[in-house]
Image 1 (cartoon, chains in turn orange, brown):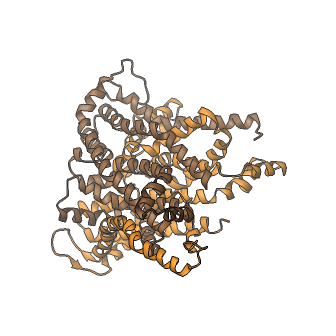
Image 2 (tube, rainbow over the protein chains, first blue to last red):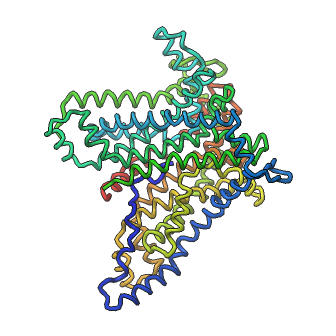
Image 3 (tube, chains in turn green, purple):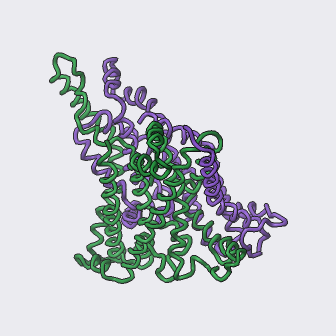
Length: 323
Length: 274
């Protein structure tokens, strides 16, 4: 989720730093002793985490890849089918639609929260002090704290035919627009997107505000003295300084969009039709309802690669040039 | 900072609007939860006669006692172990710099962006093979593994920043690696560990996919998984559904409000150090 918060020091560890005790007269021996110590006992520290990771992540991951080459109903004998499952993923119109749904959700889960988050953050910078700042941070973090399932239930009610959204529309004379937003073929996917935007806006804002607090106020003073208005200030100081935080926000929210499951499962179950079905939901259905484990696994591999393809360039862009 | 009054006011207005939008779903749920049972609530309307008793009904209907116990057991199984082994691994990779550590780290990075959906199917068969399906272990064990990429990454980032001279000084004083870890490094890592613990707690409490796939019995699930089952059962009774959802949310909200200050403090400390 909050993957890495980006702020992790990068690259610094690459140089083999401070080899033991540099001042000692016998550096070679000290160095060897350090290595023996680190190699022997050091591994004991890494091992438990590595074992849990290998057994419950790497092994299943390898199995997913293996299953994806078979036709298997989960019980009987599996039949080798080579790349057939992948061929299906990339040619079946339903599956393609499902993948494109996830990509459309990126706009709502990712672009909107990051854009709004930047806007809010540039304002919060000015009002972080005192109780008001604390209240803002607490409230904005709320959607991140509650289960997505709860967000799904709350918004299903808000967006339902009798919900607050329609009530408001009717009150302002737009009753004609009112509809069951999550059940309508045209609006279901954007409606799901709105739920995601609501959930992720707070997270993005908090991350960006944290980044904002690290910016040297002198930069703003300088911009002011140069006669920069709020917009110039934002483009020249805020945006470049927050590059890393924006990268983290994009990474986290894009993963949330592509791997979405909870919200969709609760609010629409993928309907109406396939309008809101996302890869995560389809993997679940294929594997556990339709017993097409091979196809489900191929879709899982494609989803995994899709996430990497979207996320890695962002990491490269936002981390590389940082001074 | 010299800021014009107008800017401050615009900022505040904007933020207050955002706060209202954020709170709206909760208020709307509360208004529905207080309507008389059996009625169909409409929009946001404060009931003339708030039915607080609905919460008691929902408490019984959702079997809240059992749900709380189950979620706590799962959290107790996941969080301490995850935090401990991730801290150890972070120490090993970031401070001791074990040979081959970069390979391990690379492997972990691989899992950092992994959607849980990608491994849930094999996990199902793996749990079936171990005979753990429909037990809390089916949620606990995979979650510990799935948290490792983030948790180790997080702790390693902390330990990489601690000067190696500190460890060397402790060595000169004759402490063993374990003493160095437990007496010197862990106390220093407390803010990083605290934030990690809070995050692990929340993610476990809110874990949905693993709960619905690996455990059928709602009383053996996480809070989020149980809420999913509750919606399945009472989806048509909006009043009870809203009351139940709010109830199920309450423990999370309480924990958040208690630890929120610490969370922000940890973030600020982190940024000061950086």
